[in-house]
Every structure is written in structure tokens, then in C-alpha cells.
Image (cartoon, rainbow, N blue to C red):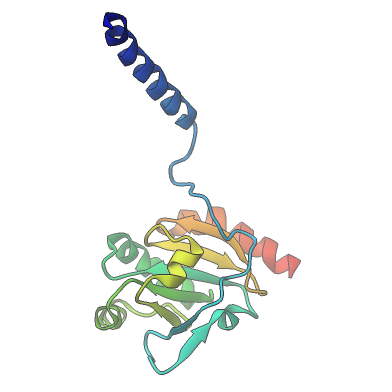
Length: 177
């Protein structure tokens, strides 16, 4: 019995060490993308600004687009919003996915900060977000002309992310389509 008193902490320490060792070298900002290279999941949700208009996955087909998941409760979304406005003014096609938010607050946000989105899907319950594998906001997906998810970025889109990640991918998928 006395032997287990000494062995148990040692076994726990070895197990914990093995778990921590396997995590070394992994980038914590790189999360699995369940939908990578798959079509967008089927959905039918209202538009944020026109609740009588219903949007579906078909609305995201036809041209390369960024699908930006955002919410008014997300401080990082406010950080990236000015840059999204800049990208939109340069002609970048950005679709919004307002995630688990209040319609009135989201509408007020856009009035105050500007609207960089071609249109905005209102996902009040988070169903589309769940189907996409959204962990939180902001997240931005690159969607090709066929409506296929080509990339997922977790976190703020800024100049560095745009130049280093999205621009090369956009060039690649524009050439391949």
C-alpha cells in the first residue's frame, strides 16, 4: 500500500509530461477546419438588414468571397472592422455572418462603424456557425466561386494577415477557377 503512495504521483507526472510534450510545437491559433475543401453547409437564414429576405448557400456562389463571422459582443471584431471597411472600399467581396447577436445591436454597430459587407446573414441561434465549426468571432473563411470553403482564419484580419495569407490564396483560387 505504501508503494502506491510514491508511484501514483510519479505516474501522474509522467502522464502530464507526455500530454504537454505532444503539444509542443503546435500553433494554438491553428484550429481544425471541419469544412475545408467542402461545400458550404446548406442553410436558409434571414438577412440582417432585411429580415423579410432569406439567404441560402446559393447566394455565396459565383464569385470568390470572404465570409466574415462577427458580432457586437466581440471586441476583436471591432478591432478588425476598420480594416474590413478598407478592403471593401478596394472591391474585396466580403459577406457577413452575424453570429449569435441581437439584430438591433448589430444594425446600430453598422450604422456607427460602417458596413463593409455585400450582404449579411443573420445567424441568431448560431446554427450556420455550428455547421461551419465556428469556435467564436472573428473568423473569416475564403469561399471559392463554387461555394467551397478554401481557408479558415481564426482571429483578426489585418494588413499582415491579408498580405501574407489571403492575397496568395485569392490569387491561387482565382487562377484555378
